[in-house]
Amino acid sequence: MPLSGAERARRHREKLKQNPALYSEYLRKGHDRYERRKEEGSIKLVHDMTNREKRHARKSWRQRKQRQKEKQTSLIRQLNDTPPPTPNTSVSDEYRRKSRSGRKRAACYREVDKLKIKLQTKTREADRYRKRLERIEKRTKDINSPRSKTRNLLQGKKVSNAARRSLLFHNVLLMGLREKYKQAKAYRQKQLLDKIFVKSLLKKYRLTSMAAKEIGINTKRLKQAPRDHGTLFRRREQLVAKMKTSVENFLSRDDNSRVKAGKKSTKTHKKDKQQIRLLTDSLKTLHLKYTLEMDSKMSYSMFCRLKPFNIRHPKPSDRETCQCKRHENLRFKAARLKQLSVIATADLHDNTKHMVCDEMSKDCMYRDCNSCRGRRVPVDEFDGGQITQWYEWKTKRVERPSENDATKTVTMTVKERESGTIGNLVEEFQNELEKCCKHFFNIRNQYQSLKALKAKLTDKDIICHIDFSENFSCKYQEEIQSMHFGASQRQVSLHTGVMYTNGATESFCSISDNLKHGPVGIWAHLLPALEWSKEKFPNTENLVFVSDGPTNHPISLQGQLLSAVYGTVWYGL
Image (cartoon, rainbow, N blue to C red):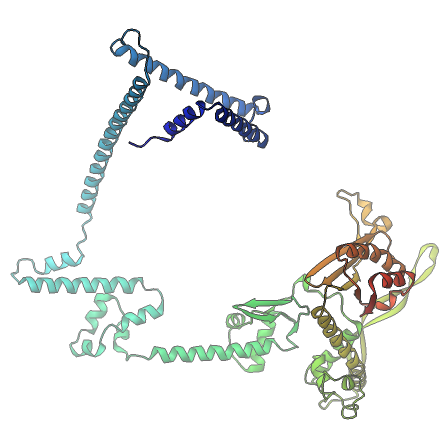
């Protein structure tokens, strides 16, 4: 019989006791383990316990002591019941082993008695429930089962066993078909069950009504000619695909949605990555517009279901706050001309394509090309004297009242409604778009140059992209009401940046209560970041600055010192 874990551990300890050095090492390891567990908190001393933990520990100690006393009492009782020991002999190991085996045997006997009682109880309970089930089945016997129907039809008649089996099979088949047809919820499932019957044979033997009554199928279904559902399904799929393409093209138009700018403003569905577009009106209005333009009777629910996944309603976070003034004013004019059906599209880049030979050519975009220098955006016929209105961003001086009944002049940027003739609007649009061609080319070239710089980075190069963030208002966790008004609110200036190196990208941000964004402030924010970068990247020799306003970065004494440290300092847009 294999030894138990406790017996093996006991023998191991006895073996260690024979070697004092090993036994002392064993005790030392046990003491170290105890101290480590005490430091980790898995063992708590009494003075470290809570009152609840003390009560729980004392209760377990009492129970353990009680079990120990019960074992000692049972051992003494067994020793008293055994014959007296041989004189001048002590209790040997053999006797202790036999006493332990006797206790184990007694425990097994007690466990067997308990299991016998439990088995008898469960057996009586199972018999009781079995008898109860028999009575229930006897009371609720199904008289409509296939076997009962067969027995009722053949009651008192002498037929062969084969005829009896055939009739039973007929009843089982009808019952199965009836249950399947009743459980079928989808129209396609019922169509599959209809195909089981050969309708010509049912009609020949005049069994159509009987089959419909027995199974529960509509009589018209069994009488109508079979249909090619595969062809119908394919036609429906082709129609839905055509409708989906039509809705997608309609919602992707510039007058119905606008593209959301940003590299991360994309959405992926089933591994298809598309740029997000934001709707310019509600879906109900766009659905009405679609039905009128396309002369379609598509329902609103189908229109919403066919909407592309990348077109959605704008959220408050989609509000554009960093738009280019030149772009926006030109976009307002293009949108108004498109609404008046003067130009074909309101997209500025599409209109630029009509004015140049090649958008990637500097001569064409700078209007130095002899072939396309005088080319303009094609327009449709319009009434040049008709008055129209459009929006425009303007910066102007405004008089505002101040203290002591005086006035002060402030500079404000406002969005105002301009009015004029369509002819003047077309002329302004053509002239501004021609000037913006250079602007568009510069933007595209800057992005391409920055991408090329990042691709060719070495261990000696760093690209530092910097910009000032908006001034942030400081807040206390708890404030009084007057803190919300006037000059009580303090602001801080954040100067953010990203350093691109070969294989790593590091971001940094400096904060200051000085709100000046001039050259002196820029260098004050930059110098700590550059000292940190010199420690982190000691092999750097070339430093490239990328910013939205490089002319504000001074080539002063700090710039000369920086050039001496890094070797080359380059400023770019």
